[in-house]
Length: 174
Image (cartoon, rainbow, N blue to C red):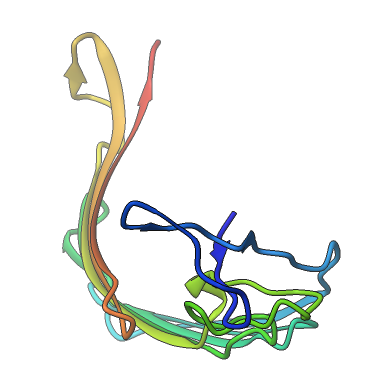
C-alpha cells in the first residue's frame, strides 16, 4: 500500500522520519475498457514491420495510449533475427491521485501511487533470437529449440528509468 500524507493534518515524526497519516484508500471495484489493434507489414523477405496501438479507459478517470513498433530483420533465413523496437505510453491521472502532502483527510478515496498519476514513458530496445529448427544442437544432452535475448531502456518523465534484460530458452528434454 502507498503511504498518504494529508495537508490538513499535523505532521508526526519519529526522529527525522515523517510518519504517514494513512495508507491509500481506493474503491473496491474498477471498470476497465481497452481496445487494441495490430498492423504488420512485410517490407521484404528479410524485413518486416510490426505495429501495435491500444486505447485504455477506466471509471477512475484514467485514459491511456500505447503505441509500439518493432522491425524484425532476418539475418539468417529462418534461424537468426535481430529486432529493434520502440514503445510510447501516455496516461492521465486518476481522480484519486495527489502527491506528497496534498490530500485532504475528508476525501473518501486517495492515493499517492505515481503509477496512477499522469505520466509519459518511452521504451527503446532490441532483441536477438536464434532458432535451432531441427534441434540438432545439444547442450548438456538437452535439445534446445531457440534462444531469445532482449534489452530494453525504459524512461518516464517522472525521473524513473530502468534497464531490463531478458533471456528465454526453449528446449526438449528428450
